Length: 578
Image (cartoon, rainbow, N blue to C red; front, top):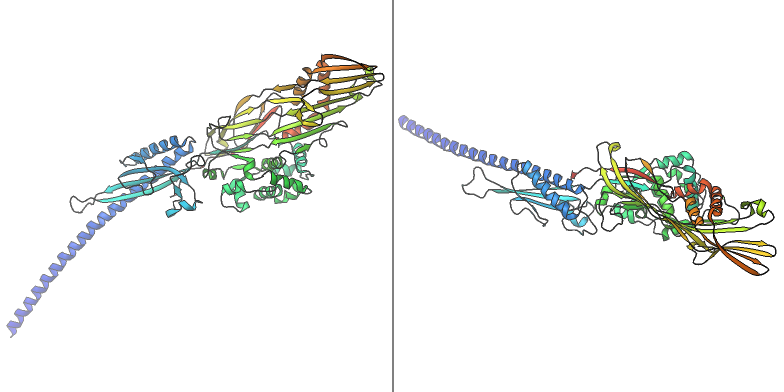
């Protein structure tokens, strides 16, 4: 019994040792297979990360090409080439192709699509991408590039002849061209002239101090700050929101943290000014020429806009088409008239360097001064006549004039970006248009006379003298100049066409008909006014003095020069948005 029991025990132990050996083999095989699978999985994850890095770098490189404002076809071609070059530099050998399909990446290679990224576009929000490859090129310009990289990775320890695993990585790079904000024809640095001009436009008394005004001149706000203050979701909504002048001033001053100055500027303003602003369609978009297509206009959201300039521009928009009586602001002789009519208000410009086939200047981003008509009727008595000649007489001289003030346009033709804002530069091409002056109708200073105009009517007892002038128009051509300015810089660009010179030129070439009636018998002779009215014009504009020039300068019209002002240059960086 003992021996038999021992033999059975020995067999049981041997069987147990055999079972353990089998389990060990199975366990080791399982561990080995797990290790091989882990290596394969690790390899796949590594290649996926590598592929994602390729996609990220390619998207950034391609998006940078969108900063060079050009036609959509050229930008797409450059983006494709940049993505291919970036992929090659980062070890990806697949070919790049243009593919804006909904599900690119079906085959190995790189699918590149230049399109529109807009975080506010709910229709394109699938998967958090906010990207669409199809858009209307007449309304939008591409501001992002989607890159999808696909690659088949072999399984290291798989079945020989297997297809491997296809990996896919996607990235979206967003970039918009650098933008600048600038204006032309601003005379805001002169406080007294600016205050007088605003008082005329607003119909009230401006109680700002010189330091208050200088604070506004030195302050900028961005479109994004205005958007937040207005409580709207997008820049486009901000640009198109209708505002009264009071609401516009409250918006701008509130965004600039200058609310305390609102009453000083608008206190006592007649209600008709707000009504005019609403009728004129006042909004932020009316005072800005935003040379950026949607949705890239968000790239201009962080560029600084001068507060004083915005306030002056809005006041002019509100008075579009209305005659502004300047007689109270400019010293004139009794009976004289001086009225200004804003035909087209000025515009500040914000945008990139972008050629245009429709703009006369050939560039999309252009600022302009106001288009204004100045009506002048001067009624002068014997104090302008040599008392030694007509000491006992009181002749009446009337000179009605209509001046079409020269406008200036400035186009952004170049930008130089740098890390330091002070080192950035904007290149502007400024063109002044033709100034013209003509004899006006006495009852309508806004129209050139179509027939002879009576300048003087002098009773001489039994005789009577009448001086008539034939209609004539005098013009002064414009000129062009290129300027390179840093943010905050301004430059005066000299041009011909001073108001006194225009009047003098007209007077020198005026055809006069002098009719002397003696006992009812008229005698008419024709002559040139020449030096007589030349001297008269110097007296006239000695009376007007620099006051009129200052007022016009504050309204953006400087007949002797154009004042360029670069408010800000923003060089936004390219970034990954997906």
